Structures are given as C-alpha cells and as structure tokens.
Image 1 (cartoon, rainbow, N blue to C red):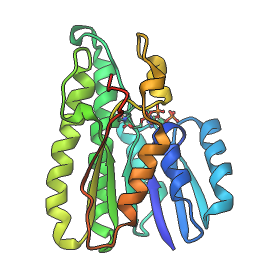
Image 2 (cartoon, rainbow, N blue to C red):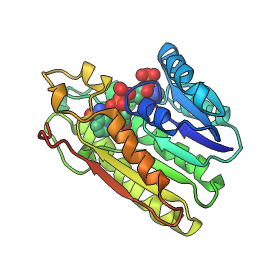
Image 3 (tube, protein in one colour):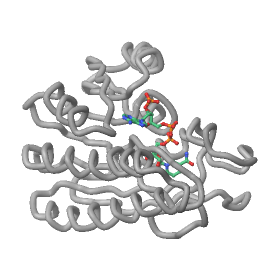
Length: 230
Ligand SMILES: NC(=O)c1ccc[n+]([C@@H]2O[C@H](COP(=O)([O-])OP(=O)(O)OC[C@H]3O[C@@H](n4cnc5c(N)ncnc54)[C@H](OP(=O)(O)O)[C@@H]3O)[C@@H](O)[C@H]2O)c1
C-alpha cells in the first residue's frame, strides 16, 4: 500500500491532485483546515482508494505543523505534496506582521518542516511535489510577501533535490500560472477567471510526472495559459 500526504487538499489544486491520485492501492492522507470542505473531498475519493485519513491542522502555527506530523505517524510516505498556500496581495507597506507570519508559516515553514521530517524515511522511488508558482521566478507589484515566500521555497526545493538525488527520491517542482481556485476570492481586483488554467490541469501535470519510471525525474513543470498570463 502506498501512502500519499497532500497538504491543502480541502479545495483548489490540492483537491484536484487528491482526486487525480486516488487509486485502490493508495492510502490518501488529506490535510486541510475547513472540516466541511475536507469531508466533501474525502467522500468523493473514498470509493476509489484504499483508505482516506482526514487531517485538520492550521499550518500557520508551529503547533499545527507538529500536530500534523504526529497524526501522520511513523510509517514512511511514498509521496509528500507540499501544496497548502496563502496569498496576501497588497502594497508591501501595508502588510501586517500577522499576515507576514502567516505567509511565512504556511508557504515556507510548513513545507520546510514537513520535508525535513518525512524525507529521511521515504524509500527510493518516492517523490516530493512542491506546488510553487510562476511567482517563484518572476516578481509582481503588490505580491511581495507571496513572491518572497515562493522564491524561498524555490531555493529550498532546488537544494533538497540535490541532497535527495542519491537516495533516488524525486523532487518535482510545479510552477502554475494563475489557476482558477478560491485563492482569488480574497484578492482585491477583477481577475479574469476565463483566462486562468484549471486546477485539474495542474493535477494532470503532477500525475504525469509521477507516472514516469522511477529513474526518470520530470523535475520542473511550468504551466501557462495560452490566452495570456495575468
Ligand atoms: N490559484 C493560483 O492561481 C495558483 C497559482 C500558482 C500557484 N498556486 C499555489 O497552489 C497552492 C494551492 O492554491 P489554490 O489555488 O488551490 O488555493 P485555495 O483554493 O485557496 O486552497 C488553498 C489550500 O491551502 C490550505 N491552507 C491555506 N491556509 C492554510 C493554513 N493556515 N493552514 C492549513 N492549510 C491552509 C487551504 O485549506 P482550507 O481552505 O481548508 O483552510 C486550502 O486547502 C498554493 O501553494 C498556491 O500558492 C496557486
């Protein structure tokens, strides 16, 4: 039985990845904060996988990250998907200390700590998928905290990949352009949803990378919209 942990699986890209990777020989460990939304995802994937474990933890705080680690337990993971993320979008002078701490906690400290904890026990042939963003490589006005967090995760992911290469653990970094999810609901402004890619497309790219033979690493995947990025 394979064990897959997906953070931020209650909606959006994380949910689409969970739905895509559900299989009879897979135990899905699905994390989120919203109990109702996560229950809905679990109900949807349960008939298609061996077992589903619901994990409700706030990754913005250290205790939430350590509680998640304790709940996952010691049995090795075959896949860790670092997907949970938040976007605070405003001029950098207006970002509050709390918003900054939350951005750093969810987008940087959580993937760092989860990778540091789980990677040592992951077997050869296992994978770590990091959902970054085109904002991990390109800067945008008013996205300073988000870009800083994703640039940080980019540096971490690239370094970890080299450290895990000899152990045959693949680190797959995914860089989606604007994707039509709820993350945009709380971002001020008019955002043309019809020009965004779908979370299912991102999940399809993840599944394709994972489906490659164990000795092949599809290491960096950028998804853009041909209707023009925002
Ligand atoms: N949408 C885009 O345009 C886009 C583009 C490039 C990259 N990304 C990246 O893709 C990833 C998923 O984003 P999405 O678009 O699918 O967003 P989304 O629909 O808003 O989903 C975000 C997920 O992260 C979880 N999350 C947020 N804050 C959390 C916290 N404090 N503790 C624990 N979990 C938390 C949410 O859980 P609850 O809802 O249960 O609280 C939810 O499951 C993020 O890393 C994002 O940066 C998104």
